[in-house]
Amino acid sequence: MDAKQKSITFKSEAQKAVFERITPWIREIFGELAVSISSSRPIVRIAFGTAAVHVNVQPWKENDVVINTRSYVVTNVKITPELLHYLLRENDQMRFGAFGIDDANDIFFEYSIVGSTCDRAELKAAVSAVAFTSDEYDDQIATRWGGERAIDR
Figure (cartoon, rainbow, N blue to C red):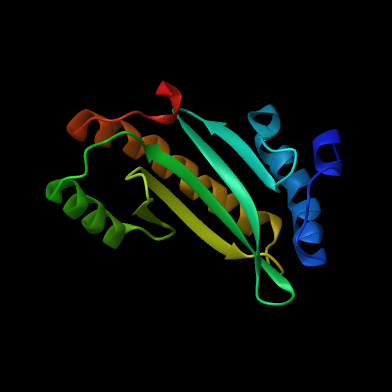
């Protein structure tokens, strides 16, 4: 555990256990591209091409957690009916994950898995799906509708 992990505030023992189990996997798989971004929350960021992926361990139910993998694909974009239709049609083609829009109208792509049953291969698949999808779609969306990719921010 690195120095940042020592000061993280966990909401449950399950959250702590899963975060401590998956963090070494993330570092083994993604190497120096993976960094802890918060001294108080269980989040790891992974740089991938033009995208940035956040792996966040969140409480779920009484004794479990959800591992949420999210990447902001494009921010500061004007949301149009054409763009929304495009995102919904692309969601229909996705095997893992889906596009969404947050309160600031920023477009993200995310995928969540159950923490208690997650193994290294499943975690790698989840993070990779979000990373590859975000890295591919950020250019397409920014070119057609504008906005900023993670690398632009």
